[in-house]
Image: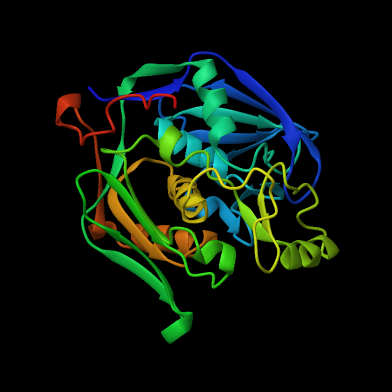
Length: 307
């Protein structure tokens, strides 16, 4: 049986929120089979659980936010991406503020936390959403078009193309295809950092956003070049971060997927629209398990190694 996974023990981290600038403590704890991934706001007078789902996403401006009633958790996508990359099904995320800490701006710190806690197989079958029919969402026309698509595929593959028309970005790779059967998430994707432009950062800060951002947790560019003294971690770090984000956004559906995802200039909002479009068509997907893990698509039956 291809089994569900949780952590062997708890692990903790302390950091600041990218947009709020608030100090936040994060505790990742094991959870029983079929719990899913549950964020718990432990700083509230009565703790509130927010279970991830496509319909729990209530804000997609600059990050993915999930909510239950008035309780919210912002910027969940990097941690969710790490969980997707390592195949974590069940997890409690205790958090002491309303934004997940940005740490180094990538998913690599979360990968380290999860792997340091150890990954434990559980006595329950891992449940996948298998896409049966192509689902697509799109906006705009001509030079302004952007789109995202899910297609049937025996595995999990993501393809992303960016188009920023910025000298520093245009000099790097603009398109990446990552297949869980052939690549290693922790090595190939997880280290890609979030990025921004100085002109946008100034505007965001005037609106109370990006208060925790800086050169130690983001790639920052002026009108011409990357300002980080250590440069880029990958030759195509910008588009790889878009793959990282997409993996986190798609895992908010609550289960790993068997599909080929492709996108052009997509973002958090369109990724969530894509999930909702899929769920609105029951004939376009099915839930599957693998009684014999050797019958599961390559790359999904084993715990992803460290870098």
